[in-house]
Length: 485
Image 1 (tube, one colour):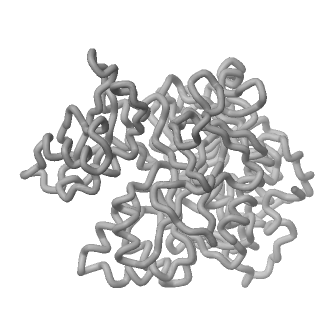
Image 2: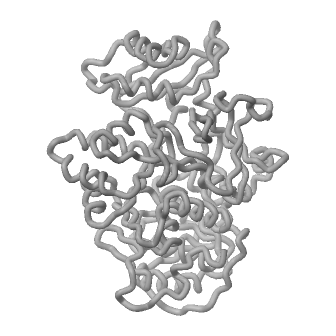
Image 3: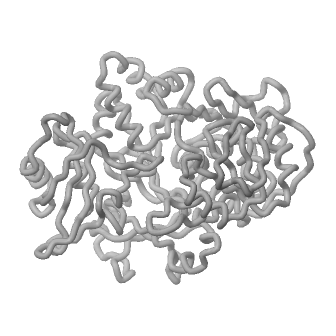
């Protein structure tokens, strides 16, 4: 790896250089991004760490690229983070500066950190900076903190390069691709895949700012070749495809895209099939985590298969293990995913205990995700070990397949499945359902029979709760702990 962003190494300073990023009407060419990031890199070189107020703007891209060029680890901050959590992240990471756009209003939790204003179109003093070593830290990305205060995963440059290059191979990703998305830039999906991915290839990213079906159609029809999204976004696209007032352009746009990719959570098979039926184009899935970046992915030249996240990417070792750590004898059995490869994080910042607990003695990372493996190596995620593996009546049951079955019922718009203690079964299956028609929800017994007929009797929900909406985080993941898990 000679450079993490080779397209910026000696980028042409001509005004007609290729477009690098676009946020609405705000465009940065490679020449402008090169100049602005080189100037900022010269100012921050030598800092221990810098925080980045990660709004969906060109200034965020300039700030992160400048930190990478300076060899200074960047800590992306979610602008919607609460004061207590934000204060924890700042105290834990101790950034020298917080890099923010001129119009950004920063909260009190950042009051003790010096601000450095980022100007997307600015130039200034530049100096040659050495390329950092592949193992040096590039980003410190904080986890969601579902089991305690957020932990900062230290991501080295080699992990970013390894994941992006593996996806280049799997997705036939080139500098001619124009990526469209509306993902937040404080997370690895939107920032690493969605921004650094195109920049490493020398391509372009068009960020919608705020997701909308109209925005997706507009950008794909005007030159976009790839779309990245989370399941919530594809659910909304599937619904929009059924609206006669807006479906024609959207259907044409999605059908014409080279690649539609979903990640950050499992894409319900029901939505996958709705989109495929309307457009002839299947959404492909990949599987990754903050600590591992990308582990598996459907290939662009492969056969899409709903409900799977494809085989392991080049360089990634993946195994499925039992609760005692032994490798499962039958790949079709549910077990925990463990991975090893150059895509892994280095450590949790200031948490040697958590780092040690996360790895096996032979260097595999314990993901906490449960899965099975098809005979040809395609991985099927069934959920998180802590919330999605239900042990009922002597069976291991993955919540994901029950959720997909529920979504096939016409009376169900959204669904989540959890387990709760049961004196007889060990755990009983609980369904949380958002009905398609709130005024006329389906009967619990009807839904239980529906699941039993599609899957097996022991997989039927024993309890059904009707909700107005499912709790979700910024990435569209259902927060099952808020459902009483």
